[in-house]
Amino acid sequence: MIFVPYYNVTMKSIEIPNCANCKSFHNSSLQSLSQEEVDKLTAVKSCSFYKKGQIILHEGSRAQGVYCIHNGKVKLSRMGPEGRDQIIRFAKNGDLLGYRSVLSGENLSASMIALEDTHACFIPKNHIFEYIENNPKFSLDLMKLACHDLGEAGKLITNMAQKSVRERMAEILLMLNNIFGEDADGYIDLALTREEYANMVGTATETIIRLISDLKSQGIIETKGRRTKIVKRQELIRIGNIFD
Image (tube, rainbow, N blue to C red; front, side, top):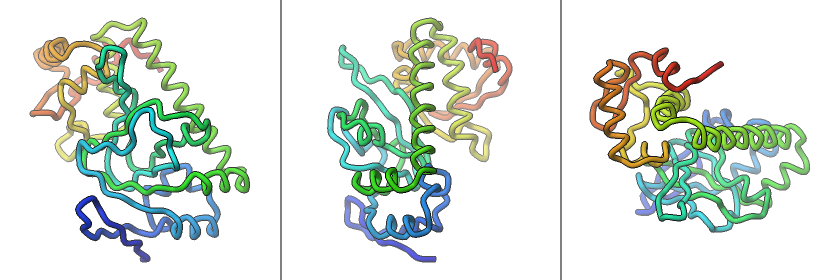
Protein backbone atom coordinates (compact mmCIF):
# COMPACT_ATOMS: atom_id res chain seq x y z
CA MET A 1 0.00 0.00 0.00
CA ILE A 2 1.25 3.46 -0.94
CA PHE A 3 1.04 6.17 1.71
CA VAL A 4 1.09 9.94 1.41
CA PRO A 5 2.51 11.67 4.50
CA TYR A 6 0.94 14.84 5.83
CA TYR A 7 0.99 16.91 9.00
CA ASN A 8 -1.60 17.99 11.51
CA VAL A 9 -1.79 21.30 13.32
CA THR A 10 0.90 20.19 15.78
CA MET A 11 3.16 19.05 12.91
CA LYS A 12 2.86 15.44 14.01
CA SER A 13 3.45 13.17 11.02
CA ILE A 14 0.44 11.05 10.03
CA GLU A 15 0.03 8.67 7.13
CA ILE A 16 -2.99 8.38 4.87
CA PRO A 17 -3.49 5.77 2.12
CA ASN A 18 -3.24 6.45 -1.57
CA CYS A 19 -6.67 7.38 -3.04
CA ALA A 20 -6.78 4.08 -4.93
CA ASN A 21 -6.67 2.17 -1.62
CA CYS A 22 -8.91 4.51 0.41
CA LYS A 23 -12.34 3.14 1.40
CA SER A 24 -13.69 6.65 1.93
CA PHE A 25 -12.61 7.64 -1.57
CA HIS A 26 -14.59 4.76 -3.04
CA ASN A 27 -17.69 5.90 -1.11
CA SER A 28 -17.53 9.36 -2.66
CA SER A 29 -18.40 10.88 -6.04
CA LEU A 30 -14.67 10.78 -6.78
CA GLN A 31 -14.90 7.04 -7.40
CA SER A 32 -15.94 7.87 -10.97
CA LEU A 33 -12.45 9.13 -11.80
CA SER A 34 -10.24 7.10 -14.12
CA GLN A 35 -7.09 5.41 -12.83
CA GLU A 36 -5.00 8.12 -14.46
CA GLU A 37 -7.06 10.82 -12.76
CA VAL A 38 -6.83 9.02 -9.41
CA ASP A 39 -3.05 8.84 -9.69
CA LYS A 40 -2.89 12.55 -10.48
CA LEU A 41 -5.25 13.36 -7.63
CA THR A 42 -3.03 11.49 -5.16
CA ALA A 43 -0.09 13.60 -6.31
CA VAL A 44 -1.80 17.01 -6.15
CA LYS A 45 -4.02 16.73 -3.06
CA SER A 46 -3.02 17.92 0.40
CA CYS A 47 -4.37 16.44 3.63
CA SER A 48 -5.05 17.93 7.05
CA PHE A 49 -6.00 16.88 10.55
CA TYR A 50 -8.70 18.81 12.43
CA LYS A 51 -9.29 18.43 16.14
CA LYS A 52 -12.81 18.07 17.53
CA GLY A 53 -14.49 21.49 17.45
CA GLN A 54 -12.05 22.98 14.94
CA ILE A 55 -13.50 24.91 11.99
CA ILE A 56 -12.51 23.47 8.63
CA LEU A 57 -14.11 26.23 6.54
CA HIS A 58 -15.80 29.45 7.67
CA GLU A 59 -19.23 30.60 6.54
CA GLY A 60 -18.86 33.50 4.10
CA SER A 61 -15.39 32.52 2.89
CA ARG A 62 -14.61 31.51 -0.69
CA ALA A 63 -13.75 27.85 -1.17
CA GLN A 64 -10.54 27.34 -3.14
CA GLY A 65 -11.20 23.65 -3.54
CA VAL A 66 -13.12 20.65 -2.28
CA TYR A 67 -12.52 18.61 0.88
CA CYS A 68 -13.08 14.86 0.93
CA ILE A 69 -13.48 13.43 4.44
CA HIS A 70 -11.05 10.56 4.89
CA ASN A 71 -12.07 9.79 8.46
CA GLY A 72 -14.32 11.68 10.86
CA LYS A 73 -17.63 13.49 11.22
CA VAL A 74 -18.43 17.11 10.36
CA LYS A 75 -21.41 19.41 10.91
CA LEU A 76 -22.44 22.20 8.56
CA SER A 77 -23.76 25.12 10.55
CA ARG A 78 -25.22 28.47 9.47
CA MET A 79 -25.44 31.56 11.66
CA GLY A 80 -28.99 32.91 12.00
CA PRO A 81 -29.98 36.59 12.14
CA GLU A 82 -30.19 36.46 15.94
CA GLY A 83 -26.71 34.98 16.30
CA ARG A 84 -27.86 31.38 16.81
CA ASP A 85 -26.33 28.50 14.90
CA GLN A 86 -28.58 26.33 12.72
CA ILE A 87 -27.15 22.92 11.88
CA ILE A 88 -28.26 22.20 8.34
CA ARG A 89 -26.62 18.84 7.71
CA PHE A 90 -23.80 16.43 8.57
CA ALA A 91 -20.95 14.86 6.64
CA LYS A 92 -19.10 11.59 7.14
CA ASN A 93 -16.37 9.49 5.52
CA GLY A 94 -16.29 9.98 1.75
CA ASP A 95 -18.49 13.09 1.70
CA LEU A 96 -17.37 16.14 -0.28
CA LEU A 97 -17.36 19.57 1.36
CA GLY A 98 -17.33 22.93 -0.39
CA TYR A 99 -18.18 21.66 -3.86
CA ARG A 100 -21.29 23.85 -4.20
CA SER A 101 -19.29 26.99 -3.48
CA VAL A 102 -16.64 25.93 -5.99
CA LEU A 103 -19.18 25.22 -8.73
CA SER A 104 -21.25 28.36 -8.17
CA GLY A 105 -18.37 30.73 -7.45
CA GLU A 106 -20.29 31.91 -4.38
CA ASN A 107 -19.14 32.27 -0.79
CA LEU A 108 -19.75 29.37 1.57
CA SER A 109 -23.27 29.39 3.01
CA ALA A 110 -22.28 27.44 6.13
CA SER A 111 -19.31 26.78 8.39
CA MET A 112 -17.89 23.26 8.48
CA ILE A 113 -16.86 22.11 11.95
CA ALA A 114 -15.28 18.82 13.05
CA LEU A 115 -17.51 16.89 15.46
CA GLU A 116 -14.63 14.56 16.27
CA ASP A 117 -10.97 14.33 15.28
CA THR A 118 -11.17 14.41 11.49
CA HIS A 119 -8.82 13.77 8.58
CA ALA A 120 -9.75 15.51 5.32
CA CYS A 121 -8.06 15.72 1.92
CA PHE A 122 -8.10 19.01 -0.02
CA ILE A 123 -8.43 19.04 -3.82
CA PRO A 124 -7.73 22.38 -5.56
CA LYS A 125 -10.69 23.65 -7.60
CA ASN A 126 -8.79 23.76 -10.90
CA HIS A 127 -8.47 19.97 -10.72
CA ILE A 128 -12.16 19.59 -9.89
CA PHE A 129 -13.06 21.62 -12.99
CA GLU A 130 -10.62 19.54 -15.04
CA TYR A 131 -12.38 16.34 -13.95
CA ILE A 132 -15.78 17.88 -14.72
CA GLU A 133 -14.68 18.85 -18.23
CA ASN A 134 -13.02 15.53 -19.08
CA ASN A 135 -15.06 12.92 -17.19
CA PRO A 136 -18.82 12.79 -17.95
CA LYS A 137 -19.47 10.12 -15.28
CA PHE A 138 -17.90 12.28 -12.59
CA SER A 139 -19.90 15.31 -13.80
CA LEU A 140 -23.13 13.29 -13.61
CA ASP A 141 -22.34 11.97 -10.13
CA LEU A 142 -21.58 15.48 -8.90
CA MET A 143 -24.86 16.69 -10.41
CA LYS A 144 -26.74 13.88 -8.64
CA LEU A 145 -25.06 14.85 -5.37
CA ALA A 146 -26.06 18.49 -5.81
CA CYS A 147 -29.67 17.50 -6.58
CA HIS A 148 -29.79 15.24 -3.53
CA ASP A 149 -28.45 17.96 -1.24
CA LEU A 150 -30.95 20.44 -2.72
CA GLY A 151 -33.78 18.00 -2.03
CA GLU A 152 -32.64 17.53 1.57
CA ALA A 153 -32.48 21.32 2.01
CA GLY A 154 -36.07 21.53 0.74
CA LYS A 155 -37.17 18.91 3.28
CA LEU A 156 -35.50 20.89 6.06
CA ILE A 157 -37.33 24.08 5.09
CA THR A 158 -40.68 22.26 4.91
CA ASN A 159 -40.17 20.52 8.24
CA MET A 160 -39.18 23.74 10.00
CA ALA A 161 -42.31 25.45 8.67
CA GLN A 162 -44.90 22.71 9.05
CA LYS A 163 -43.82 20.14 11.65
CA SER A 164 -43.96 20.48 15.40
CA VAL A 165 -40.80 20.44 17.52
CA ARG A 166 -41.62 16.90 18.68
CA GLU A 167 -42.06 15.70 15.10
CA ARG A 168 -38.80 17.31 14.02
CA MET A 169 -36.91 15.78 16.93
CA ALA A 170 -38.17 12.28 16.08
CA GLU A 171 -37.23 12.68 12.42
CA ILE A 172 -33.75 13.98 13.26
CA LEU A 173 -33.02 11.01 15.53
CA LEU A 174 -34.01 8.64 12.74
CA MET A 175 -31.97 10.60 10.21
CA LEU A 176 -28.85 10.49 12.37
CA ASN A 177 -29.29 6.76 12.88
CA ASN A 178 -29.56 6.24 9.11
CA ILE A 179 -26.52 8.41 8.33
CA PHE A 180 -24.09 7.26 11.00
CA GLY A 181 -25.42 3.86 11.99
CA GLU A 182 -24.95 2.37 15.45
CA ASP A 183 -21.95 1.61 17.62
CA ALA A 184 -21.23 -1.73 19.29
CA ASP A 185 -23.71 -0.90 22.08
CA GLY A 186 -26.55 0.02 19.73
CA TYR A 187 -26.29 3.79 20.24
CA ILE A 188 -26.28 6.21 17.32
CA ASP A 189 -22.63 6.51 16.30
CA LEU A 190 -22.57 10.27 16.87
CA ALA A 191 -22.49 12.01 20.25
CA LEU A 192 -24.24 15.39 20.29
CA THR A 193 -24.93 17.92 23.01
CA ARG A 194 -28.48 19.00 23.84
CA GLU A 195 -27.58 22.40 22.37
CA GLU A 196 -26.57 20.80 19.07
CA TYR A 197 -29.88 18.94 18.95
CA ALA A 198 -31.63 22.26 19.60
CA ASN A 199 -29.66 23.84 16.74
CA MET A 200 -30.92 21.15 14.40
CA VAL A 201 -34.52 21.17 15.53
CA GLY A 202 -34.68 24.96 15.71
CA THR A 203 -35.79 25.38 19.29
CA ALA A 204 -34.48 26.19 22.76
CA THR A 205 -32.10 23.81 24.54
CA GLU A 206 -34.54 23.59 27.47
CA THR A 207 -37.24 22.31 25.11
CA ILE A 208 -34.91 19.58 23.79
CA ILE A 209 -34.06 18.51 27.34
CA ARG A 210 -37.78 18.09 28.10
CA LEU A 211 -38.40 16.25 24.83
CA ILE A 212 -35.56 13.78 25.40
CA SER A 213 -36.77 13.19 28.95
CA ASP A 214 -40.28 12.55 27.65
CA LEU A 215 -39.09 10.11 24.97
CA LYS A 216 -37.00 8.28 27.56
CA SER A 217 -39.90 8.00 30.01
CA GLN A 218 -41.97 6.38 27.25
CA GLY A 219 -39.20 3.88 26.54
CA ILE A 220 -38.79 5.13 22.96
CA ILE A 221 -35.11 6.06 23.38
CA GLU A 222 -32.30 5.51 25.86
CA THR A 223 -29.45 7.89 26.59
CA LYS A 224 -26.04 7.65 28.21
CA GLY A 225 -24.37 11.04 28.42
CA ARG A 226 -24.39 12.46 24.88
CA ARG A 227 -25.18 9.10 23.31
CA THR A 228 -28.69 8.14 22.19
CA LYS A 229 -30.18 4.73 21.38
CA ILE A 230 -33.41 4.26 19.45
CA VAL A 231 -35.43 1.55 21.21
CA LYS A 232 -38.82 1.84 19.48
CA ARG A 233 -38.09 2.82 15.88
CA GLN A 234 -41.67 2.44 14.64
CA GLU A 235 -42.92 4.71 17.39
CA LEU A 236 -40.41 7.37 16.39
CA ILE A 237 -41.58 7.02 12.77
CA ARG A 238 -45.16 7.54 13.96
CA ILE A 239 -44.23 10.59 16.06
CA GLY A 240 -42.21 12.07 13.21
CA ASN A 241 -45.15 11.69 10.85
CA ILE A 242 -42.82 10.04 8.33
CA PHE A 243 -44.08 8.20 5.27
CA ASP A 244 -41.96 6.02 2.97
